[in-house]
Length: 66
Image (tube, rainbow, N blue to C red; front, side, top):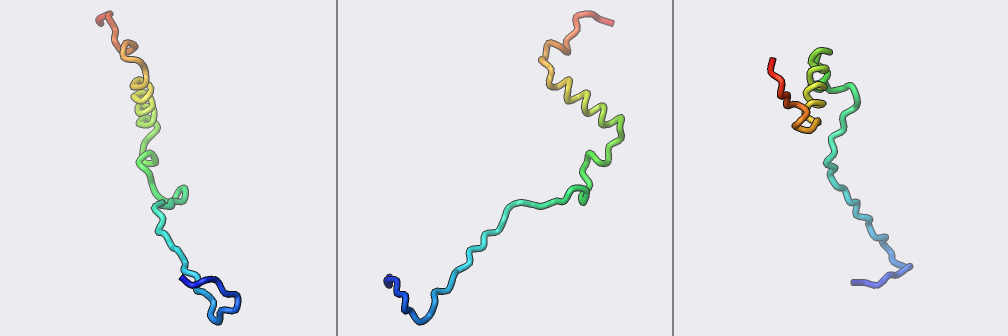
């Protein structure tokens, strides 16, 4: 490897490093998401299912029969 010389005739060419990104940019409102196609009733049902799924198992078991 050659040593550094301030009187070098040709400047060293800079090698640009280009790395391909792995992010996928999506501006808000450009693409339709599945939640955009849901009605209010479907959203409420999904919320109920999610909330009931987060509760401990014994909350959903009832000993009284109808």
